[in-house]
Length: 240
Image 1 (tube, rainbow, N blue to C red):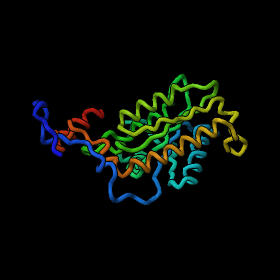
Image 2 (image 1 turned 120 degrees about the vertical axis):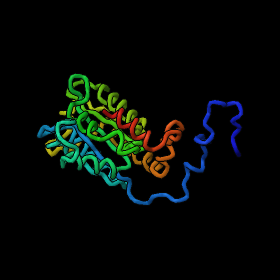
Image 3 (image 1 turned 90 degrees about the vertical axis):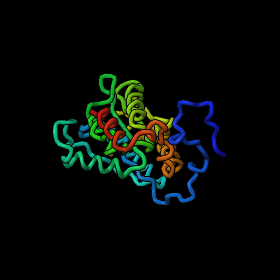
Image 4 (image 1 turned 30 degrees about the horizontal axis):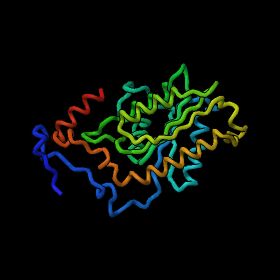
């Protein structure tokens, strides 16, 4: 049914789309394992954000996903090296490859770490007129040395929204992380562990649900009105 736009004189009829269920339920659906990129925000030898990330990767693999963990060691500070730096290219290639992500940061001085932010800052907002993160799912987690806090995960959610990712409702915040892992680096059984299981399960479900219609979910009226060249200029300017 064609929409009646007579009462919307400022609307560009050529760019207007009426949302419909058909675009959200494509006839052909991907059958490969969901591709999940995991980032963590500490370089310590016994990094609890890394240990939590490794535990999440094991869970994702058991749930039928294909997880890949990015090692941030050797990644330069944003803008301190050219974009063809090997660690930058590795990160960007993984971001392109992925259909969902897990971001796990320690909370330091009430915020995510600089190492975590540097990784996210190296992922471009746009390549040409395409945002490499838009429409992809995201789960956020944090570890704390003291009592439970949510500052880091709240900041990660802001970044996920800015990068037009589908950030799932659930999240994990592990307090006193030094008590939650054994000598072998495995997470001990606890309500914190069960929450991590919940978060990874929800991430896989949301990824399976949205990956085939991700482009439709983030398709915008305002951007359809622009030419690809004009959109690329505007988006790249905003990424400075």
